[in-house]
Length: 147
Image (cartoon, rainbow, N blue to C red):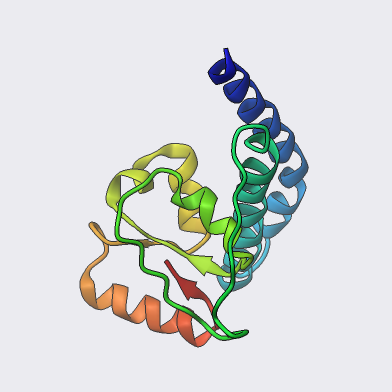
């Protein structure tokens, strides 16, 4: 029964967040790519926090201890596993300006792929290596952290 309740909360919190985020998303489509990516990363961060700290709150508590000594530049986070929860758990890091390296399949999903492209995520299976390097250098120069 708790699994059904969790899915109901996921659906309710997700739908509510999408309704609220609809206006900034639509306005961001009028912005240049760099600014649009920034707005979309804030919205993805907000969505992750809504799910992790809202919908899943009755079932799990997430805590992150920042041991970076106050780093303010672009950081690189490396996780040694594959997980569908990483996009949500990255919101627990308390930093919104982050881009993920993703496998090709999420980029092909009509909903998630659309937003991942707007956020300037790096598709490691379809993007040529030289283009990945150029894209990552540009993002890091703008202070965007990589996951």
